[in-house]
Image (cartoon, rainbow, N blue to C red; front, side):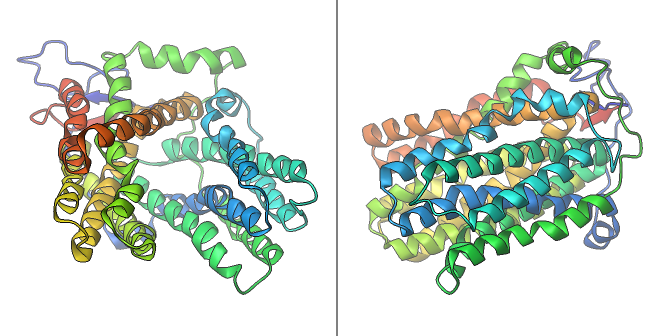
Length: 443
């Protein structure tokens, strides 16, 4: 049984309320919040938070650790640059997501079977890195890295699909916040911590250690519960490919919602694209920038994800999207102040902390929205497509940020960045106005 997103409306003033799903729910009420004790007693939420760890480990490994390892071995920087192409499976995962919607093993569950297979494959691929010398065979390294990224992307598809199906509406805020937090923590372990460990241990030990982290993850996958009401798979592969698009675009205001998914984090992504070069240009030392972004930024992102998820569950999704959407947009003004004042260390740390804290809050609420937008029957494909739309903003804002900073200067660039949030907030008003009722799910 799938749950589709709807907006409760005042039928006296809107005879035909916009439905983001199957039907309108005129009896929706704010959802109860979930406290820390209730979270820890909730097997579904604990499993989601734990399963986000093996989902985040490969990203830090491929994006950060392996390129540093290659450079440490003296591999040409141009080769290291080309190596980034192994990330493509993460961007193209929607292409094979229908296979996961249509097929699955009987054990330990339709989605958990894919998670389990993917974890074993990523674990073996990570372990294989310990026995490769990139100086002798770069092609072998690329092949193993592609195995890791392909199966990591497959794990992400299955995990997102599992999350959509396993969470109840009142769990979606805190559940998504928790999995963002543990995902980022896992990236930190397989990135910064792994590189630091390589100062004391040989690289092959580092890779074997990272591979070993998947063993408890496999145990969690086997322990995780199945959905209370499992959705039926598409009847054919053709339906698995076409069904998600047809189901989504038959909804009221579907195009507006798709555009909102692209634009919601536009201001945050626009500012974030050039933060490191900006701080360096202002005159901060590299070690200060590293502390700000890798330590303060990480802690505040995790804190923001958890707090944002909890508040989304407590307030409801509609208020959370408005509050965090505005907050993540205006928080970039802190960088405008830094640009105007100059190299003031406490001010810079405060600006980074504020921007990453609100970004974490916005992400938690936004992922709760994606969860509610996704039809359970097509959860693998629809969530993969929606998350790809979400990533478009980050890709498109990079060039615009460079042009804007060059033409306007740093102060005016960051001062005007919040305006990039206006189109997204206008679209939010169209299908979830501030004065409207809670966005909810409908069976």
